[in-house]
Length: 270
Image 1 (tube, rainbow, N blue to C red):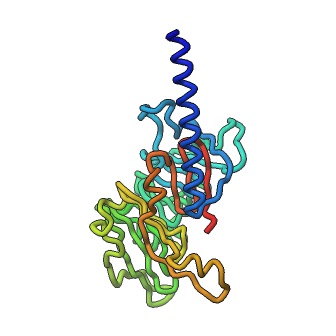
Image 2: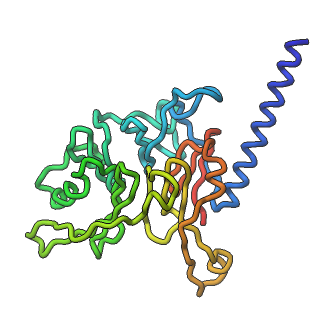
């Protein structure tokens, strides 16, 4: 009898969990995401409900995951590697301290590397001085280009604020110079420290992630701008109620992609 009850209870939990996953899937689809492939990467999933030993995602790009300790993993969404996983540990000893535009990384050795090849950036690189200026401060953890023409860059620092730097140079042979520093996104406006962000202007992939919540750009007139060719979408940074509702079930988010703890990938379709 005891085994029978245990078996019935287990079956009930499986059915309940499956139904819950279906609800999350439906709600994310209503939130502007489409269902994609599965993401198999055992190191980033808990083995059981109360397991806390699995690796945590700090940043996710289209091709990489950086875990909370700064180690790099390569990812392949939609196609497995030979290890039967969608991820594999990168063949590099670099431990990431900061990241710039998902293309340049600063290691804990305070050296700068190309993210695609993990090779050291030489000082002869035309942009080396800019990389050093943007990533050189010890408390900078992430940088995004906000406006190339105006020389505006957003810098997330370890104090939990995102700063706007305007950088210019008089001519090709002149050094870069910081002409202004302001707070672009204040942590006090978002309730807690900002720990990640992406910026691509008025676009659903622009987001701010704090210790407690996720905010992203949403079209406040979506019903009209999605219907009429002559109506432009008007975007506003809003707390995403759906993603926040299920944040404990989401292992990775980068503005374009959501990965849940039941291994389902969702991509922005708005």
